[in-house]
Image 1 (cartoon, rainbow, N blue to C red):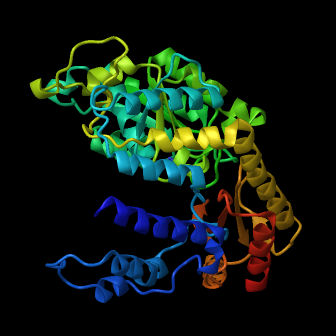
Image 2 (spheres, helix red, strand yellow):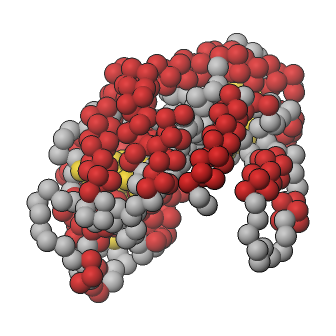
Length: 457
Ligand SMILES: Cc1ncc(COP(=O)(O)O)c(C=O)c1O
């Protein structure tokens, strides 16, 4: 592609993006397609001869876009309503153009240092002290897996060479994200050594039961090594009591990992900083700017007070990657499984500079405020009940009726194409979940979602 051609089609692509973001609500949020539809519409083999870019862009518009679930849609209120933003997309574009591999400082000094700068800023925004080292991974699942690997390195350093003994035990709440258990599977801890601690009436980990479980395992000759607490659990966004948990992990010398994949965004607001206050005592913390910080997927920020242990767990340097020792030159490949690394920091840096802390806080504050309003509307309608407290921007509720009634209600609401809600199970019952977090969502969209729910009844 010549530079002139690139310029021409680049402008066309940017025009398309701008038009799309101007009104993503013109598409149904959830596509009306059947499984296999796109596969059947596309050729079985790649072309022998190159095709014109017009054709590529045309097929993108006419075949791919209609098959998308539109996460940019203002009515996208399912799972966590993650959101990108203009500055984030620009950062992503420029980083694709540079196409560097930031495995070593010398393979792209500015990529490495911008990662340090952007994560240093984010660390300050969420109120973590400056002895936390930051690194970007793709997702919170991978961040938490690295936390578990570092925790094991601290508890059982021989495991790196010899393999694990299989008697380390990990603790998390029964409301924790499945990525904690998956991390334990991947690191070889074993599912049978993952203890899922019951929660209280607000879905927070019960510290008394955590203590009991640790003591029981110790008495049985097992080796507790890690507690993974959550700030903003996936189903209800509950917040585990970090300080009492940290009292325990400090007493028993366990690694404390805090999964704030979603909740970390709220900690940027001065009035919500307290949710991560106890995380200062943690060994590691993860938060996902690709969830609630207007940064396009993917970008997960991992912070640890023990970078020495993380490095000890993962550093393995073949001759062809050896570089001179320079104290200020960080080689991020030493701090994780992957060698090659995308230049993700650029988009986060753009987002943080474009919005500033005030701009980001204003948006997140609105999302939380609208969720609280929605919660009050639900409370005022006798046909519904709320299923959990709503500390942030997610509301869990159900129609007073059977699970099947609620399933049908959800299907009917989603069939509108105007909004997309998801569900969870709480106390064994089917519960609707409405998550606000998209940059395009306004108060009117939340009102409309509630109207659609009431109509569907
Ligand atoms: C609390 C929590 N932790 C971890 C994850 C996993 O995030 P990721 O998709 O970045 O792996 C999620 C996803 O929603 C989550 O809610």
